[in-house]
Image 1 (tube, rainbow, N blue to C red):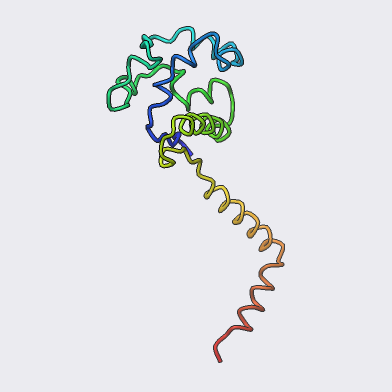
Image 2: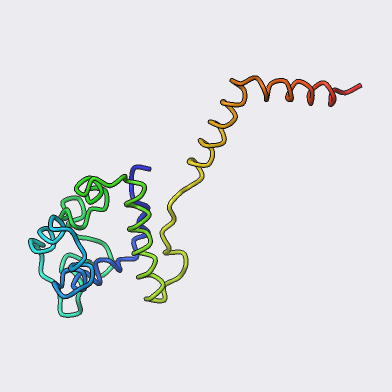
Length: 148
């Protein structure tokens, strides 16, 4: 998984003032490196708590050059957290905001587990084949199910 599967609900940008507040639980529980990024946020926060770079359509005006604090992928690298774990944690936060705002479930962030499961099953099958257990059983099943 390379990119965070953002559903573009815009809630993180609409509530950036909450996160940037030094009184917020997010701020108080963040490591120093994150607090430093929060303290250096380069854009104005509107009176409603939204980022001044948020368009009326709910998109970021400076997305390609957004601050590090707004870049989920860079956050994982900065904190030296495995990307998948960081994405799962961020998805939980997103989904909490989405539910609290009463948005459609279509906006919920889904972290894909399918490829992980397939890899696990493939690994298990390979181990069995290498041990010779599966190939014998497979040959028996084929022999028993041949058309007569």
